[in-house]
Image (tube, rainbow, N blue to C red; front, top):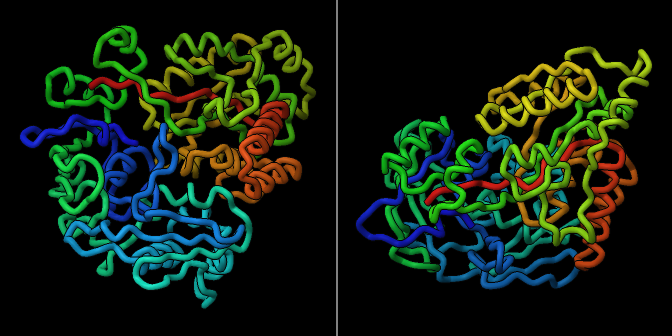
Length: 472
């Protein structure tokens, strides 16, 4: 649930907050990142949404049932309408899924639909006539046919990219008022790189109908956003800088919200065979210092996932002497070219920079390894990671659904986001088993063992639970 959905209702005063970058498109299939989530989660809703307390909550569907292990039948909610008052029908969902596989859409979301019948064929050959495993039965019944078991399939459908698409499609961003939405809001105006104004969708059937007007300002500097909040020009500060937390953490308006995200330090593919170096780098970080530096409630060195995902959450333990001995014992072949580059996204602002500088100092102090910090524009980070294969990188991996599988399947051998270059049959088997079971006890066991494998072999350094420190 977004903070917007939690705001106090008002019919006279706008609710104002900021995002760090303009989403640049009205199409949820073409945008990624937190900024886009804040906008599109309030414009589009799929069959279900995820609530941190209630779990899966019906939206576009009244219910979805597995009729077999590979067949899912969904009954649509006839009270769900587009913002022009027309009813959302099953064909609108089929249209959305077909669009995702069209060459013009170029959506990365299809990688989470590979279990859907026909998906792999469409992905490998966009011109193929192979039908997708999504069909309608009348106007209000939707059927999914899978080629392989995927017990996360329903959770995958909770994000806006899998929301229905109206018959007249998605307009260009130059005509934002023409966009038909099925979520709690619709667009009133969109001033590029400046401000998005949302007004309530009068046909949205859920929640409080007296939602406030919403003004979303594009402010790409956290300190500027903070000053606007202090001046009373923002009602909600969605990310307080770490340096400001001690000043506000005991005030009434301060609160923390855990992010459904897996953040880690990755080792480039060129370091995949250098296990001794990876281990030395992993053990040389005093995670308790980093926890204090960030005023964090979660522990760096542990995966930033809920405790409920594991039988016991695995963590990396600080061992500077072992790390130093490993670094000193590296033979000439294993010694890296120095300085080692450490890449991170500029979008993380001061908080990311502070953490990267701390790591730079730790590795110099404990291993005598010089590190070159490289802040990268967000749109160029993936390209830069692939270019600097013998370096390190900080990566944020937002979860598209609330499961352990969503966090760790990106390290499967052939996954497009496997930037660490992991190729492990054992790990791949864990992933496949997670896809095939919906038994909670077994899922916890598999999640724990798969994550333990990543840490024991030092394929990455998890950065702990990420939280937004907010002011309202």
